[in-house]
Image 1 (cartoon, rainbow, N blue to C red):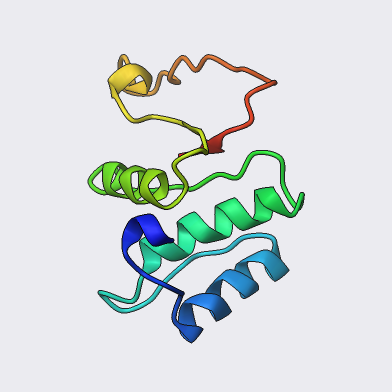
Image 2 (cartoon, rainbow, N blue to C red; image 1 turned 180 degrees about the horizontal axis):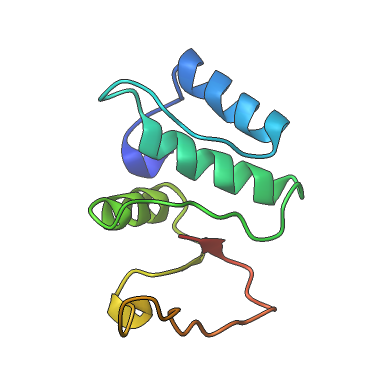
Length: 111
């Protein structure tokens, strides 16, 4: 967290991370400025660190996927992120599924 310039999470953020771990996932829905991005990043990392999941998945809108990736990389610089951070997975035509390369041995956070 020191990379982000914060010493600790707020109680509401800690509670959200705890509930996400307890429930095995969920939807993070707080007010604007409530720290949703940081909650998602911390929750994914903690679930992986504790062995609750092998490959955490963060689903995000195309408009904010880069912000989430940047926050995660700043908070956890040694962790690896895999995902759709470019247009490799764009649909070729309406109704056709995207071509996704699968690596079963990848260990990073999926975004």
